[in-house]
Length: 84
Image (cartoon, rainbow, N blue to C red; front, side, top):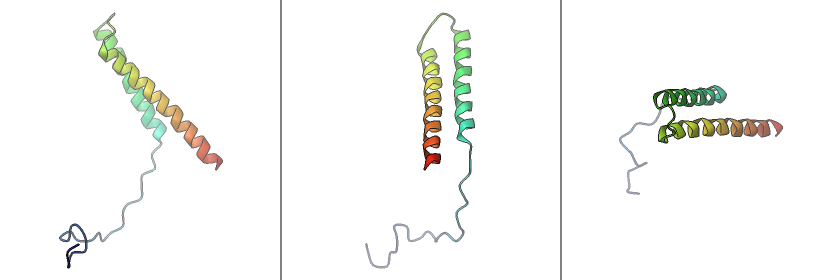
């Protein structure tokens, strides 16, 4: 480091106020809303293209399944964290 420099951005003043506390969010609602959005998209795509199982249908199915899998993983992790 060159003499006289205290950091990588010497012209930026130091932070003078504390960071706000992290938000406490119930992630189950977020995951549930995401899964519901994918299922709603699946219904819309199925109504627009009846009888065709194209890329959009499988994208919606994958989004809903991965969201449900994420919900299960989150529940297992919470349960194991409570045991400790």
